Image 1: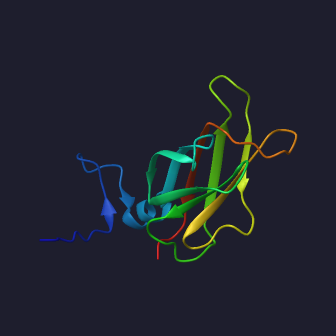
Image 2: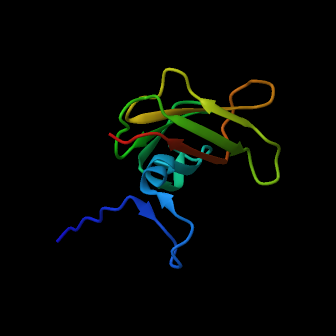
Length: 129
């Protein structure tokens, strides 16, 4: 049988360090994924609220959500690394490729060329539908 817990504030076991539940719900990542962009299909190593990954070509990926967002005005960040011990690359939102059900990802080399990367992590903050 399902149950429901309704509270306005959370505190630690000693009754200190309170935080409003709205802050916890609003500030928590609603989706994240750690994946290998060099693997076939952009293989996810681990994820939350990501049903699947799509490899859209060199340095271009889409994370498809399990549960949709309320709108496409969410914030997401991207970090990446080409391979172990290699230099940095840059990640960004792939324009025109994010919606309430997916977020698009670009991975760039410092010279602005797109590149696949072995280690990519992204998270999203916003409101679930």
